[in-house]
Length: 345
Image 1 (cartoon, helix red, strand yellow):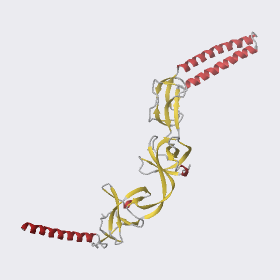
Image 2: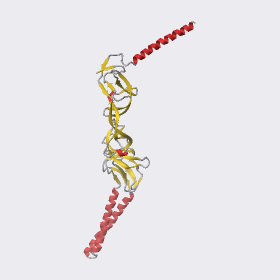
Image 3: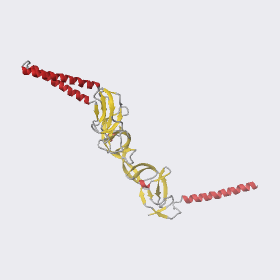
Image 4: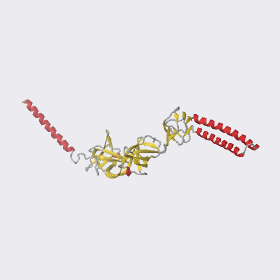
């Protein structure tokens, strides 16, 4: 019998605790807060449904609008390459030297022919003065001399191609041959790109290509820059890739030292307008990897609410979930806000 009494006492205690818990919960969810202490906050803003530009974002690669492939006009082994990948070069700078045996031999042969033609012309000039030959014969010999002289000039000009000079100022981005390799006319040896004329090449879906035009503004995001760069659509290639069925779009970039060919970039094209909920970016609270904001109810009581965020633009941030049009949010640069506080205006 004692055992039964103890169990009844325990049951009575549990019922008392449950009653206290319900009373406490009822106090927490009441519309009118029990704490009437009010604080002043620095900033208050309404959540507004605004019209924002609609963007189509796609990835691409930074390339140079002025890219030159360097090759040799002569056949021969590469004697020396003066530059490496990443080197900056100026227009007219020596890049490499070709050891062309054929061009040297052609010059030696042309110089020998010129020497013989000059000696024969001098002899015929003397014979003409003596009346031993006709003027027609002397003219033919003089013509052979002029032809031999032009052959020498041509051979010298051809041999000058053994020294390959840079046709543009830029950066060496690729070296396809090394010292000792056999160069042939038209075979690429180096690639040079002009870093002052950069663009982003990206592919756009056929669904949106009709809304993108030359001269349109576009936002380009590169990892080395904190804020997007404002680019301009340079070209929309009016032919789709036969495999992906997407269209190549080239967007010109502003000049910046930190941008280099080959960088990964994301380009956002403006394709229309849409409605979005926006609040000031400064109102966002960051806690343990989550984002939220302090809202104010009709009783001027603060409540913390978690959010799902969208894009940032001009100090405002888009709210994808967690708030509604017309909600009020507060933030303070000095005061540590907490849920349950009451604010005054």
